[in-house]
Length: 296
Image 1 (cartoon, one colour):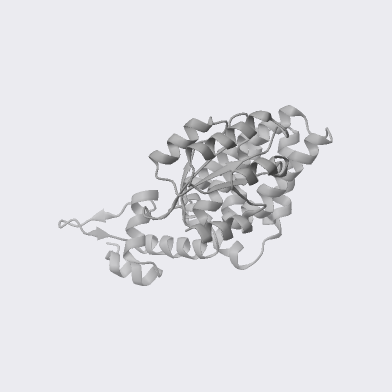
Image 2 (tube, rainbow, N blue to C red):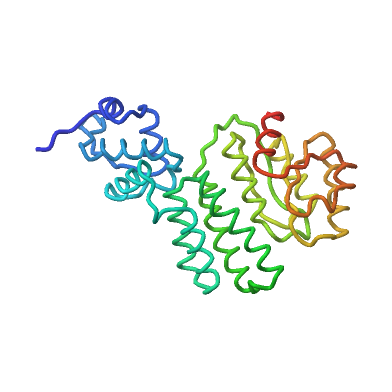
């Protein structure tokens, strides 16, 4: 018979706390240990090795939600890649693979490249070294007509799915401050809002993400119902929509004391209205991080 170990022995051997082990089992199905007659967990050496590898991977920036179901062999390969930089796992190669898949209108290959990049690079590098450059290429390529509308739509759809998966893996304490993130009426591009939602969650805020194109009255009602401490809005396109001006004014009217945070590449186009409602503007993740820290 193979030897078995208690959860306290697994915690000591893997370097994880008993609480973390239980949480990972419940939330992500990392292991499914057998039970004794008295309902105590029984773990194997393989379970211990799995937890050890998962701990090491999360310490190197990988999200537990994205790696929880990897096999032992895959986790060992990930562990090796974390210690010795693998040239095949560089951000440039992932970015090139994503761009090529987009140009070929190959959603399956694009999804695979993004998913693998998220696992190997970790969420920080995945966002800064793959997602943001890919978005920049989408913007410039579309403006210069190097990228077709179909290619841009395909890339945006796949990106949205991968980012939403990443967002849902981030665990935040229930008593953390709350922020509602969306785009106002007429703003249909939501990738910027999704990135803001992920960033807010990574910096300790509970996020209510409502997608794009939400009327001002709905934004205000949702913010009140969720007891949000702030509202985050993304402005991307169109560049000069009169509806945005009126919607921002209406949001401030309905939420007179709630901090409003606005970002996106066309934020400066609405600067007069933004100043009139006393909203905060952010240019990048670092400025968002600093602002959220001051508001928490």
